[in-house]
Image (cartoon, rainbow, N blue to C red; front, side, top):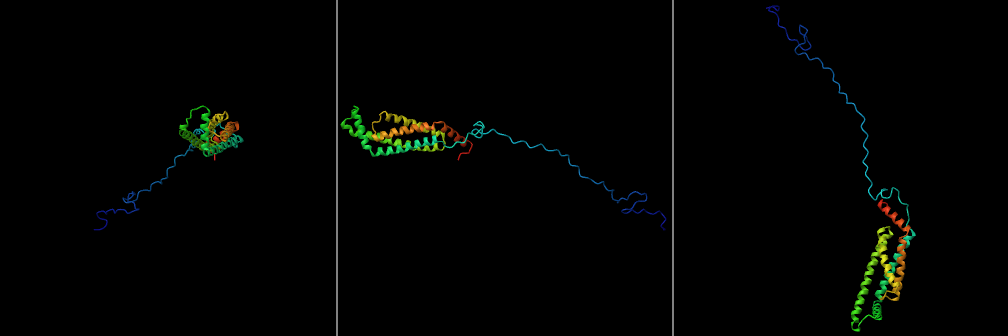
Length: 238
């Protein structure tokens, strides 16, 4: 048979080829897609300013809250405080001297106390002298030991008062008040178991303690203790 007979079969078109009717072939690639672009970022707005940190009220005793907003005038340790504390220190020294004299003259003091009791008309039987002697001895010893303990405590309070502790100054006033009362008995002749030296020493202590109490109560002393308290409350004390 010749090629023109019976018609001829249409061969499939290859890539890039078109059919007879101009349509794309079955294996022709799809048309290119349009280019894609990244989405535009959302508009940005200025952020709100940061919030101010919360404010808290000042703690009591610090800053200007307790002191009316103004610091007290700086004050050096005044003469009244120096002299007042010095008076209490002198009282301590005289107290130690008095305790030493009491222990060294204990027998003489006991004999003097018994003689004074007889002179005042008190019944001190001769047969009971030993018991009375022991009783007077115990009273004197106990009184001396208690006095030394008080002196030790007073020395501690003197140290705190020197460093501007107002509570220690108040304690010294209390101790000084007892010392003044005791000194009044000596001045009025109420002492019956003391020698002349100890009575004189007691009168001197009375005057010294009285001066110390008055000096620590004066206005310059009050101002200095107030300033020292302000330094501690504000954390500036050394």
